Image 1 (cartoon, one colour):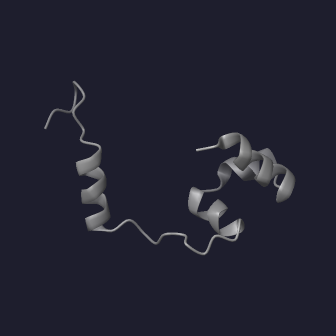
Image 2 (image 1 turned 135 degrees about the vertical axis):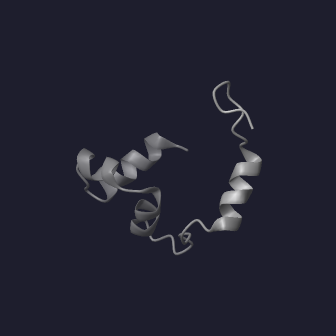
Length: 63
């Protein structure tokens, strides 16, 4: 993510305070920027896809 660009848009473009900007979820910021493609809730199939893409295989969490 281009955090610098997002911060410029949020702080300068939208006039948000830093606290308000960092309190937003990515979906809220996306909606405020006029992106109507904001995704809905993470459902079971989406979670399964994320788990397959990013398996939890660190030392303390072997599967």
